[in-house]
Image 1 (cartoon, rainbow, N blue to C red):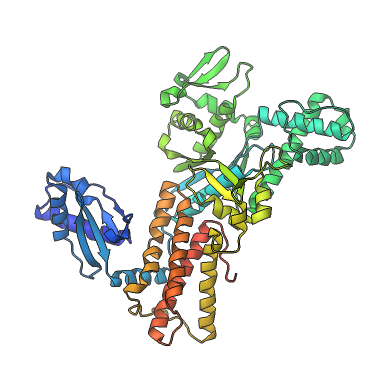
Image 2 (image 1 turned 180 degrees about the vertical axis):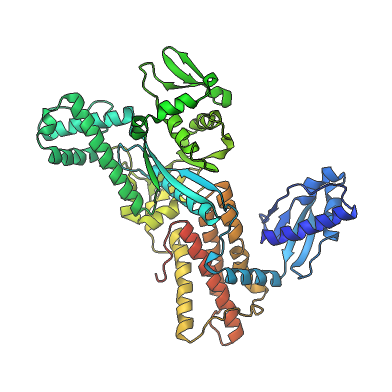
Length: 550
């Protein structure tokens, strides 16, 4: 929709510049947006405001010049208006909406997809939870946001690689090893308590039981150091397998799982350290520091401890060097909001290796407040400290969980009501959208049963002004997908789906789709089929099923 208006505006600007009406070399960038209130029109532009200073004229005068040069041979525009300080509002004619519907019909299942990212490669790293326990609901939200972002980037033509960076090196997995070893000893009947910093979740009892079954008495014969290391490796491997099972059930896939421990074993840190410019490194108190403040960080960061071991950030240096060497055009990292301090130091790594730090984009994900009928849900028993993603999927299903995780922008806290997510009613947003898709499927089945076949290029002229509402939403789909991918805002997809479902339900209640007038029936069937197609694609981008029956 915006592209068509932009083409008209650019032609008008070029004509005005050529004629000398606008004394500028070329028009500056301008925006075209849907007004907050549709009483102002279907689209509005700020072109006169951004051009006024360059042209040396008042914005309203520039707007008048642009409109005077506007050519509309297809009569797409029903009305134009200069508003406020110089905005230009546009209202489209029914013929314009019908033309866009014809484009959607012709595009078929490809409607909403584009090639704006063709030829470019992007890596997106997300979830990357430590393999020290099961995924919790915060990880689940990050998983969905990362997965849908990847789907959106693919939908606009990017080649996308999905990576999970497994933090299986350092203190957290050492604590895991010791916690598992204590659980093994408890299973043998030893009177030993968990350390203060041990992982308390009951899930480690299952891990210890599985390890004991595999090794028998061998574990008891090892030294404490060897036993803890054996427990660490087994527990990390077992818990990662559980994480992978949960992600697969949740509809989230990865191309690579990259082990931090394996990177260190392969000498990746040493290679990356050697390639860092010497002037960004310095020693202090026996540790090696990276001058991340040179690149905008609040303080410098150690990459090697005083004992010679790489720090957690040192592992990031090795990991990012490996990733950057693979020459992606862009990197996306999905992090919890509590990791906002990592953004500057990660960009420092990118810049220090000679790449544009703007190539790294970070999506920060806020917390999830889990409720039941408005009341906070208690911590999960088996996890010890949190409600697991698996528990939520068991209760509401993957579809509802994914949809609900997308109901707010990533950097906004999310209230997730389990009772609402289970409701089989239109109060439940995912049910509301899926019901619209199934409702249209039912209409199409009724049409087929009645022997009505939709024409390949139906006459859309019977669609009058009163039937434009669902079209207004439908035709924004390509713009929504492109903007959601560009701005890394996957929540826009479910917002669109909700708006389109609402427009369809109202339309369905006001108009008889299968009527006695064949041309009207054909036009209305074309409209609802395109609505169904857009809903199916939007739900697919969200990783949610589009049922034919409910």
